[in-house]
Structures are given as structure tokens and as C-alpha cells.
Image 1 (cartoon, one colour):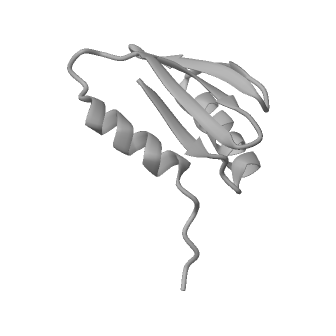
Image 2: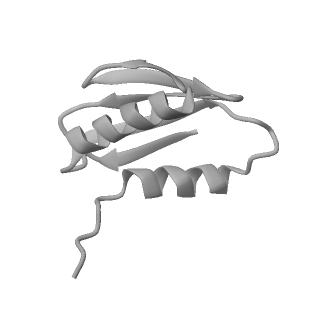
Image 3: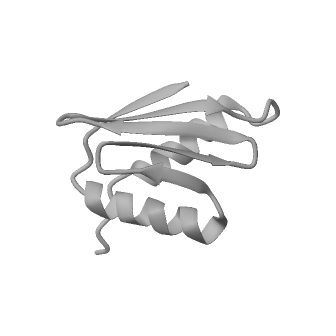
Length: 85
């Protein structure tokens, strides 16, 4: 399953957060500013970033985890941070 997002304005902060989270949770991660891959407990996927889009592809998932749950989690993770009033 593949998810395509307009290139986030906060891309460098998102990438740093993903690297910190991967390290903190023992996720196997490799990548750079353009592409990479990660795997953890039955999940695997990769990402690619070009001038206009961030593409995230889930290549492996446990059969009991619904697609909708994965989609919501990815969308929330990638979402632009909300400014506090």
C-alpha cells in the first residue's frame, strides 16, 4: 500500500523526528534526505522524497492490522504541526 503526500513544509523536522523515534523504539532504519527504508515487528516500508511529493510505501504488515489503522497513523505522523493559539 502506497501513500503520497505533497512535500511537507516541515520535512527536515519530520525526518529528524522519524530518526529519533526509530532509534528510541529499536526500529531498523536506513536512509537519507531522498529515500530510505524501515522495519519493525512485522512491518516494513520505504519512503521516497522528490521536489513535490513524499511517498511512503508499506511493503509488509501483520495480517491482523487493518489498512485503515495504518493509513490513519501515517497521515497523523506526516501532518503539519498545529500552531497553538
